[in-house]
Amino acid sequence: MPSDPAGERISDAEHAVMEVLWGQSPRSAADVCDAICTNRDWTIATVKTLLSRLVAKGAVATEPDGRRFLYRPLIARSAYVGGESQRLVDRLFGGRPSSLFAQLAQSEALTEDDLAEMESLLKELRR
Amino acid sequence: MPSDPAGERISDAEHAVMEVLWGQSPRSAADVCDAICTNRDWTIATVKTLLSRLVAKGAVATEPDGRRFLYRPLIARSAYVGGESQRLVDRLFGGRPSSLFAQLAQSEALTEDDLAEMESLLKELRR
DNA sequence: GCTTCTCGACTACATCTGTAGATGATTCGA
DNA sequence: TCGAATCATCTACAGATGTAGTCGAGAAGC
Image: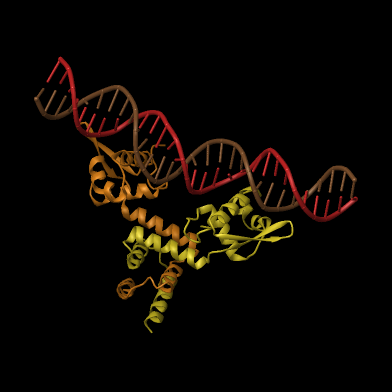
């Protein structure tokens, strides 16, 4: 069984690396480090470990580029994001997205802009 | 610094225990086990460990009841749920709840009922 | 050609998480 | 009063995670 896209869970730190690759790919380990090592206060060694783990999990593919590797995501951001969202809705809101929406509304996490955008999205879905 | 409500992260298994306590509390460890051990295929020992960890994290309080303890949540479900939702929105949607909403819509995770409920919620928020 | 740099692979290690057994105190039934 | 049942506490241990160091092979400069 070689690699299982989206089957294995992606950890927080790994996710940060994925975001970099989703932003632009393929990229070398050094490139990825350039993009986040300062932010997260990581060394190149950490990035390399995370990339290896992502490859092992089947979430990232490598292609040789001379003496080094370039890395490229194997799972789409939308798939990951969708899966995580679904997970949250299932775990905390009994699978009802409207409950999540109600929660955000109640905690005043919704700005005027959010409301407007959702309204227009709803209208579109209704067509 | 004794206990930090909501500061420490609550793990998946711990969360399952919290749900039981949120459903009804205070409860003894045995009661909690009755409520989930069959589902999750756990033994009472596992439940006790999780309860201890939750107490250590300041998420659950104990009160003596004769020779045993009763457990009660210290953090409200809404606070936990709100925090987790916010975390997701921040991590995956750049802090914009409407993007999460769009994602759910696109992945066809929204039923007719969901749409209807959100519409009425929106209307209410507009008043 | 020899030194130096860089890369991926492998190793390390502390903490967290899932899962549970062992132990010692206490209590309850007989 | 003596054994059985029940608690909470302590200990255990494997796998995941965060974070990073070491090492051998090749490349690049001189």
